[in-house]
Length: 141
Image 1: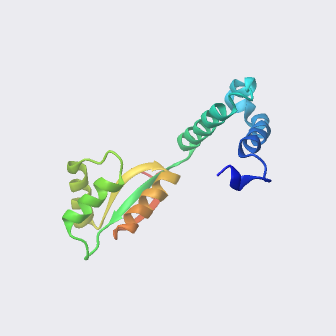
Image 2 (image 1 turned 60 degrees about the vertical axis):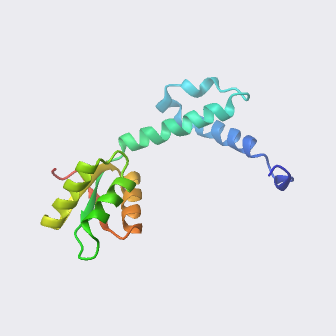
């Protein structure tokens, strides 16, 4: 892969220069933690910074509900299997309860999470043939 990139700038050096530019803008957010960046530890510090920013943005982003809508096509067992496959930490009991609620009430809340995760879960549910949508969780429970 290195040979294919000859003549183009090194990805590590681009990351370093990008990181140096970003550090000034987020210095206040990190409390100066990243000020002592060294070239030797740039990839490790850059990775830590990206992980920190992702965690911070997910914690600060408003919560969203992932909704499961009843349909007349999928069998109940299949819906339970998909919920357990797509949603991290979904237990059999929770999946059955969510499926039953959607079946009887027309809709059920699957999970409340950050918008990015909610969109991902919704797309995965849809990709497995289920009817799903998201909505902001700010209005009521």
